[in-house]
Image 1 (cartoon, rainbow, N blue to C red):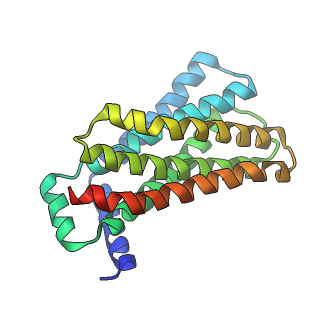
Image 2 (cartoon, rainbow, N blue to C red):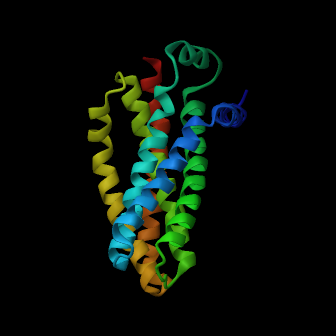
Length: 219
């Protein structure tokens, strides 16, 4: 099978397994909705800057809970089975695509619930929603790569935190700045640099994953 066919089959497998159990998806959705509700009960109303920062904190922890299980739930026997059938590049690409789809779903639900409960005027709602999509795309690519490395190192949670920290923090800074521009309704041309940075981060992370993961997979 060619790479595209392998990736397609693996993504279908991930979706089928998730649809059968639904435990992880339902748990993460419950986490997002309950966190937003608790924040509402605690604050009732917040300043727009805090509203923006709080939303990204919620999405970051939702992404961590959703994506860190990507490789942890795969038994060694199943990994050996995959190794005999498909390429390492197909495995990491399928994980990234599946986690991107999962995060896009979660972010859409979270944004709807958050903006409904915590009403806040957005100067450019379209740009803000695009920022949310780009942000969760970035979370998915970065955390999938780090999760794969961590799993091959014995599911070391400390290693995952160390590896993800240098990428996640600059990513959050760019996302908060871009979403703040959208909240203020600034001209979209001002935000082109931030959008370019986000796209570049995703491209670099995916490239590094394709180059690095096959060596890790051999072990």
